[in-house]
Length: 214
Image (cartoon, rainbow, N blue to C red; front, top):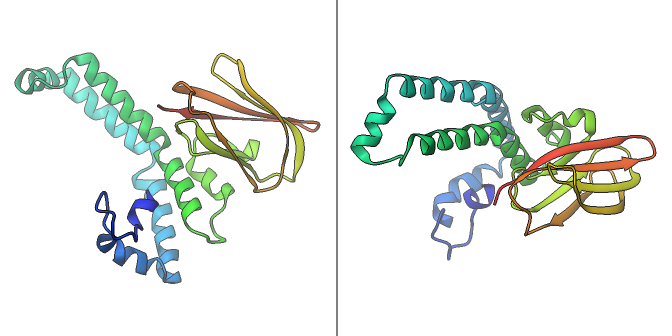
């Protein structure tokens, strides 16, 4: 996202031209603006755009349109959605997006701004997964099979497994996880679904789920 809104390449015309991003790029060079930007982000994402509030609104609107037959009338008039099941599928896709939006946005901001205030641990306050108990993150999630893992524990050696939702190990490696170092992986043929990164050391086991969406 920030790659697009800070584009400075004048040959790019979509989605954002260099001219359209100029003001934001210049403002982000000002430390005070950058600090305010982060503060406003925290306020908006933890309050107005919190997962609980936004999903509650989606559920309320869904119930309203399904209970009084409005969605059926809409389908009859406009020919879309093609069926009631298609509409429900779209609603589910929206709620799945809202489940991870604040977490994904926080990770992208952490990647974009080199600021001591932001850290892997900071992003945990926006994520439903309990990273504070695992001290392990997968970024981004959802992803298309390309991601990195990062630990903010003290450096440790162990075995890293990646498992699918059935518990089948699809990748395994002996690895030393340095504190804050990023370990990148690319699995272009992974099917969509929920996966687990498991890091087994002599002292403990850390597990974290992530989503692949292709």
